[in-house]
Length: 467
Image 1 (tube, rainbow, N blue to C red):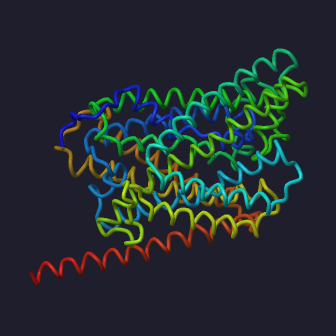
Image 2 (tube, rainbow, N blue to C red; image 1 turned 90 degrees about the vertical axis):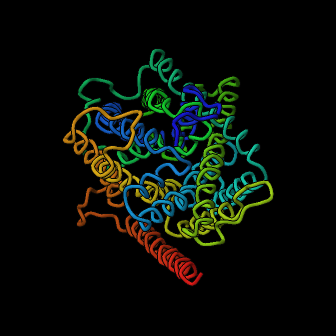
Image 3 (cartoon, rainbow, N blue to C red; image 1 turned 180 degrees about the vertical axis):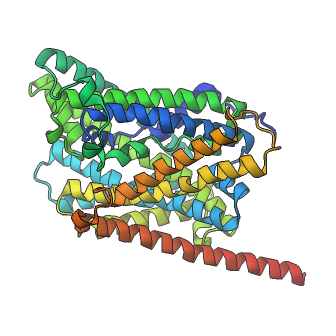
């Protein structure tokens, strides 16, 4: 496939798309919960993980352009079976992540408008939002794109306001936490539980590779990827610092932390209260935009895979307008089941949010455990393939970058399940058991779907032989 495309996406628009996909508000409080050392962790992750990840993504997307992105790369490097596993995890993750996002929405909504709203009242809001998202994605792609564009602008406004407001608050009232070289130095003891959230926040730069047919020139990818990496890293660090300037670490809640920050920054006066409500509503809308964008993208990829016989036929159903209604509806069903199931395990809203978020994040990260080995294998076995952009360094450097990226993702998966860093004697099995069981069940379901895909392929081969 030629690297020259007929689309309209240049460097700026590719970077904006990537920024919209990667930048999320819902886990900003989780990174701030690490404390001031989160700043050091952001810098470490940027240097040792995000830059290699961006280089690898840039080479793969320019060398193997196509609508499948990470799915295509894994399929090119390995066999059909690993491609099926990749597309399954990449798609089903959205239905598992959606509950965590809307649990965050319900908690923030309650903090703003209904402080006495019960946990089950918040669960009802989560389910209603799930099906609103499905409806938006089913009705029209144009509406979905409009929602995501608005959400992207609001994300920048919200995070930028938190950062600026935090600095102004610190100058007027003093900072809520100590900022020094010592406190900003990464520390494992305070970061283990929430460090995986930083990894999660930095994943997804490869998503725009599925839009190569819309690009003017796929060779713009490296510039766009690193432009979006720079903006995303700055906004995350800026927003985290803003929260830490306004709130002591011990007072940062995973769900209500953002609203609490707004209240601290703007005070209780009439104007301050109005600002809290305006920014709070903006933050709520960004969460809807998040889920609409990922549901649209993942469902379309899943529908295409299903049409190739790689996922069940029900996933392949498409409306007259081209919306992947089968995949969208299944995503809604999965989200609803997860919301209700995990509600029985949670002791409170923060517990529910983090349990569901950790579970969905594990599934979300699994395809990346295939992507980095795929890059390494393609470098070795397909070295003569044209690469418009090539990661600098010899084979040893490629091994080092791939292994480091793989290990960063792998440790994030482990720490999401065992935040006590594998000290099983102190493991909180009330938290760990549901997350671990959820991951195992999802993997087993993937293997069952794979067996069905293999049978369909075998039947196709038999039919071809008889013809």
